[in-house]
Image (cartoon, rainbow, N blue to C red; front, top):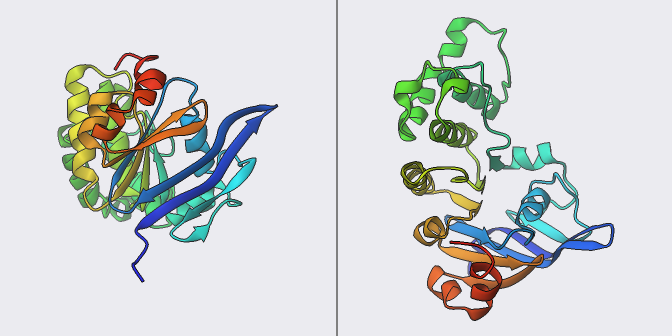
Length: 252
C-alpha cells in the first residue's frame, strides 16, 4: 500500500454564520512538502477556512485531519503544539523588542520555555546563534538590534517569517504574506517563501497571482465558500469558471 502523502485533509468542511454558509462542503488535501495556495475573490471564504484549520473557529460540519489524526475538536493552542503555525498571527511581533529578541522568544516557545524573561542573560544568549541564523536566512541580519517597531514594512514581514520558522512548524499557514507591499518587497518575500519552504509544507492565502503562479504546486480556488477548481496554475488559469469568478472580479 502506498504511503499517504497528505499532511492535512478536510472533509465536508462547512461554517455557517446565522444562516449564511461562509464555507460549504470544502474538501482539501495538502500534500507534504508542497506549497498549496488558496485563492478566490473577496468573500470567497479563504480567511474563514484558515480560522477553521487553526481552530479559531469551530466548523458547523465536517472534519479536519492532520497527520492522520482527527483535530476537529481541538483548541488553537493544541493544534499549534502539533505543528500547525499561522504566520502573521502567532508570530511576531513585539514592537519594543529587537528583531533578535523576537526570534529568540519564538525559539524559547518552540522548546517549551515560553517567555522566560526572568532567566539569566547568559541562558537567554544561548539562543542568539540560531536566532541570528534565522535573521540571516530572511535577509535582515543587519537589523538584529533594531526594535521591531522601527523596521520597514517588508522587514517586519521578513521578521514574522523568521519567527514562524523558529517554531519549527510541520505546516506553515501564510495569510496574505505580500499584502500591502511594493513590487520590490513582493519579489523579496516571495523568494524568501520559496527558500524557507524547502523541506516544509506551506498553505497560503495570496491575492497576488504572479506570486501564486511562481510558488504554488497546487492551487485551490474558492468562490462563495465552495471549491470551484483545483490544479496547477496552468490548469487554473485556463478554467473559464475561474476566470469568471476570480479574475473577473479582482485585478490580478
